[in-house]
Length: 260
Image (cartoon, rainbow, N blue to C red):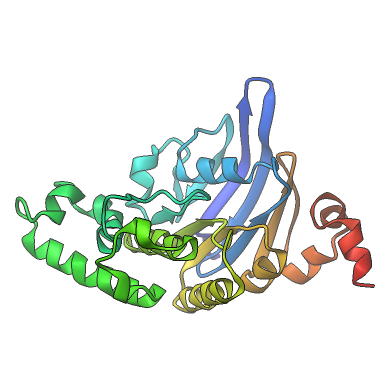
């Protein structure tokens, strides 16, 4: 029996009297790409926070690579192989593109990434390896020629690529992307789709939160749909697209009727 890479079981998160996530369960297998969709306020971002340990569960459990990580703090989950981006890009404007990607290596550096950036301490060789890997990552996302540029000189689409590159720097087994296509033009969205397809081909498991239905349907092996904190669907894209509960809650009957 294959052990899922991620197993979320009965995940619940309460904020006072508000139940933001209500007994949600789903699995993601090794090498599988899963979409997490739903209307605003569905609980998607909270679910991301629960999986990464940013917020504790009120009840339920989370297992990663067969290990119960329910009580593990956020800082211990990244070294296990979890990495994520954020809906609002969180980069360091005073640093270069390369330096921002290097920040993604922080969990691997025993003396801290800042010491490695300046070659302080016993990390000289490790820092050189990290820089080489950072350049490889920037080449992969198409920004190798912008390595020395300041972050504030980039477009939103390029900033999202840097954010993904920083997440990749941790060599994750599981990559979580929070609205990676938000604000991108058609060319940037197509480039992102191709990049994710290459990562999937390399066997990387991913969880994507995204509002672009066509993007998520094409990128994912399966899709979990949430509405008001509850899971209403967990299936392959073709069946999710025609699920009546999903149509009513998220896609919208008008969009559905326009296809017929």
